[in-house]
Image 1 (cartoon, one colour):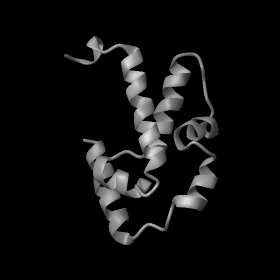
Image 2 (cartoon, one colour):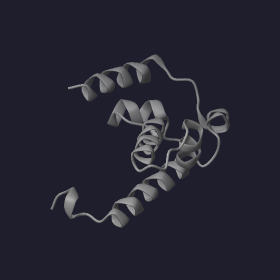
Image 3 (cartoon, one colour):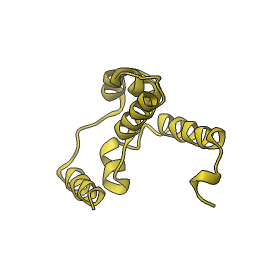
Image 4 (cartoon, one colour):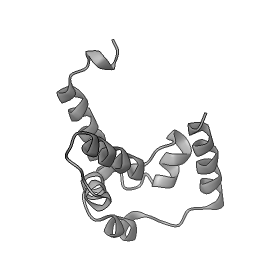
Length: 101
């Protein structure tokens, strides 16, 4: 099976389940997600913004982030985001480098 065998409805439901999970897991910091997987909530909102533009239904950056975070990005940052440690930033930098290969 490859992605062409997957219906858009199933893919969309899976995407929104991931979004719901990340909204629930506010303890999973973006810097940690970037360090482990090379993507974070901001990446998802960028991908959502690009996909919506490609589909002729453009979202601006703030709208895309509200859909992913479930609130304004600045509100989420104030409530849930702590300062990143040097170790977290180093892991993130290494992970982002791996995305380019």
